[in-house]
Amino acid sequence: MEKLNNLIQDEIIDDFNDYFSDEKCFSVVLKDNGFIDYIDMRKLENAVEVSEETYIKIMQNQVNFYEKGEFIHKAQVIELSFDELKENKLNELENTKTQAENADILYKDKLYQADSKAKELLTQSLVIFSSVGAVPDNFVWKSSDNSLNVFSLDDLKNLSLLIAQRTQEITAKYWSYKEQIRNATTSDELDLIKLEF
Image (cartoon, rainbow, N blue to C red; front, top):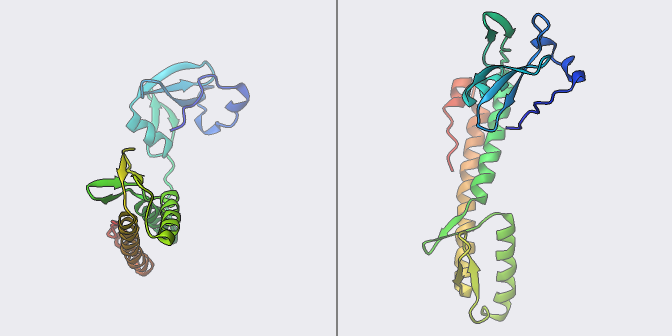
């Protein structure tokens, strides 16, 4: 979460009309120790220290704030339409699919990178070495822990095959989840769709 600056410029204050109360204007500042100061921006004085959990609620407009009984800020309840909830679920699906496709993959008790750059390098290596029928002597492939592992042409092919098989499985699940989301008619039905790859 981006740290806010303690040195708040005067011209910014006018943008915080919802926070005004008896000539006070408040904002939140994330401190180095992970806690929050609730700041009177007119005097730049500390008012209330809250936990990081509360800070997240502040930023999500989930709580009301009072200082010594004085109203400071009212939480805004934003309700999404069902179409917006569906769109959010579809976005979550896309992100989860991408993460699954780019996750490291296990081969011979070692994890290997399988993001787009790693897959491109693997494909290029296969094309080059398959054309001559073998990899060079002492050819190695770097695993996710940065160790160098002796690889044969068959190892390159087997690793590529594992990645392709995983991609097929992910794609099948993706289309199934997408269909479930599109067919959902209530928010409860959307909540029951657990995106697991």
